[in-house]
Image (cartoon, rainbow, N blue to C red; front, side, top):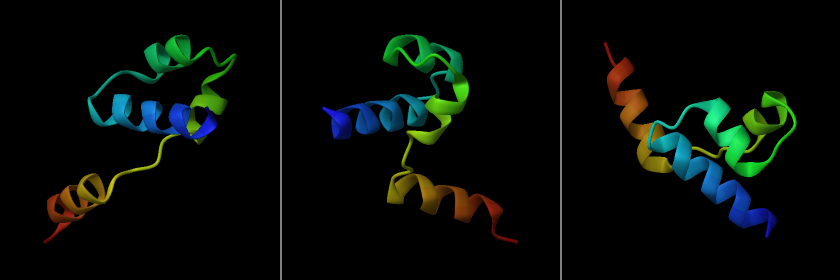
Length: 54
């Protein structure tokens, strides 16, 4: 169950869902807890790094 929640939060974040909506969907009482959940996919990290390349 716990791993499912992490995966769901990460997927929602990757799809651009706002933190507040994620918080409400998952049932967290604070955004602080919601912000601890996402794990960025290798693809997301790579795309971010490529966007930062000079």
